Image (cartoon, rainbow, N blue to C red; front, side, top):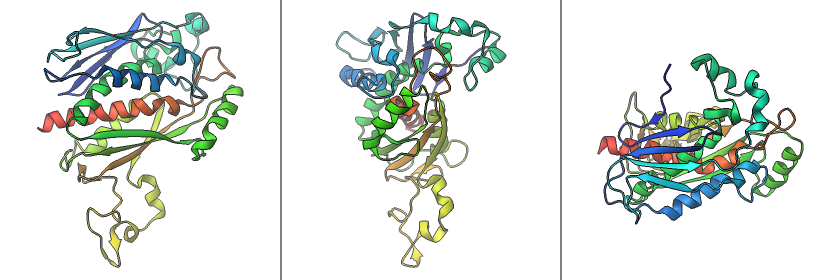
Length: 320
């Protein structure tokens, strides 16, 4: 059985590595020659993903150096050569001894059992390939896609909207501190907005823009839900609430039509808005030794931006 680890068909990203291996990394194909890669924005995104200074974050994530080593495809001045860009990020703070007991055990809610059922073998150390450690490589690749999109006036911004049922950002830290102190975990919601995307991105049937975005976002560890526009909130509304103004059909591009910037699977030129839900982490201090996140969603924000950018840049290159 072979595992497939490449995202995209025109702008392609392949990730490699395990949580407690020597390194994680990736190969990116599709960055045009001559592109100036803004290394500072990549470092900033990796810092956001690490959660340094945030409450409820795994101590390992805050201690990893996350220094990117460029192996190919980039000049010393950070200019893309147009050839595959390969990079790695060394694992510098793994504590495999914490996971020795997992050699012959499986954690409920984790990929331990299904990986072994599928492939007949697994790396039990820190969850191996299923660990969120792998998402650091996605952030690097996603930042390159974000830079290409930004050069065309397309911008992506994600933020933490909820921790559990709490939507007040001023209460997030206290709640996360309480959950972490209890050795437990809690779910969260991340919202994302894309501005500047022109009308016409996406296909009307089997390659709809929301289906591509959903596939990208749901590939993130622990993500269990995706909706756009009014999403599931539409259940509490009538069609007249969404599509009418003053007893007449609303202007298709007005705020009365709350479609999240996507109609018929195709972007309509207005801002795209979607949300994604992250479940409570399955590995918690009450049950398992190790270093854990109290809320996956906290560090997922730059990962959501990265996967959104990878999906949009791939679609863009396919359609132009």
